[in-house]
Image (cartoon, rainbow, N blue to C red; front, side, top):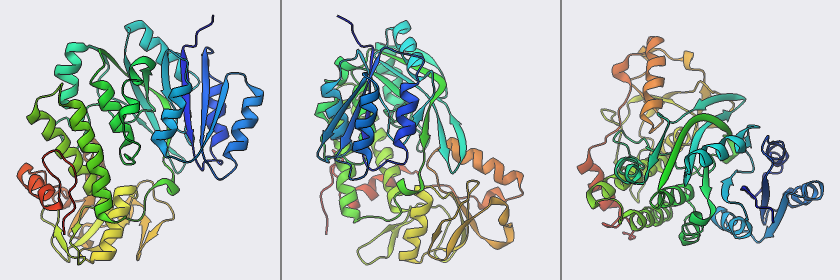
Length: 411
């Protein structure tokens, strides 16, 4: 009986424009012993027909049609039908390098690894950025528990993960993933990847980190959340994720380390979703994380990604800053309120009081800061984020998060 080495699972919902490129990139792999499981999560467009047409052409393809249940439910449905020794997840609007599976398989087999992670490419508006883990290596069970996990969610710099949350740049052992994935509640619809990755890492006995970029992640304009939902709804969703992580990691990390990692991760996600400024029930700012920046300060915002968009959207509601310019190296046709994205060369020091770099990644922040300083921007005007642990603790308590990071609705 022939065994399958890798099951590639692709959750699919409303991505008919991108799906053929994704499927073709997988079918054209240099590696042959795999199955491709296309999970149509009740997609209302032409995705179901696209899946069926491809399945007629290639016997390696399985198609699952199911009622819409969200990303986690689609990943679970794929895993239930998978027969491979290893599991690879690919998002249906992304694509992979020809040697993606070949490289992942060799990394896993050569090191008897329970988990493999690699670098990736980020494609946005036709531009491609290469993103790699800081170091490559093989880590045994002791090193995973003593070195990797204590820094996996928060590595000491706000807010950088020691291990990326994504499941799509990783290779999992099916037998171990079966022990984790079905415990993750389908209600977790924010941070699903983190729920899987970190709880899986807690049971992994060997972990391989490669810096080879193999996966192409497509950052789409229409995939970025441009409006903020009811904050209490979002806090509840974040609380589901954080309390799940605490329950799964409490047996392998000491309480102080675990609480600190989750605390900073939760804080970072709140900042991204809220646009930094936290508003009260009357639309007034009661928490401002941008150090030195005051009400009515003249501000430039760098980045048109989700965080930057949320800063602009929140400020439209609160009218707290006077946003002079909105800039990005990836500038494109996008407008929020009265601000459109412009090129980074469009600003001068005399026009603004402070510049906010809309990222929580310290390496990205420092790289952008260096580029701006080379263009003559005053570094003293570039804003830092408040990362005082006491202030963060007080904020989370005020918002309604308890000691287990569950959200308890407040008035």
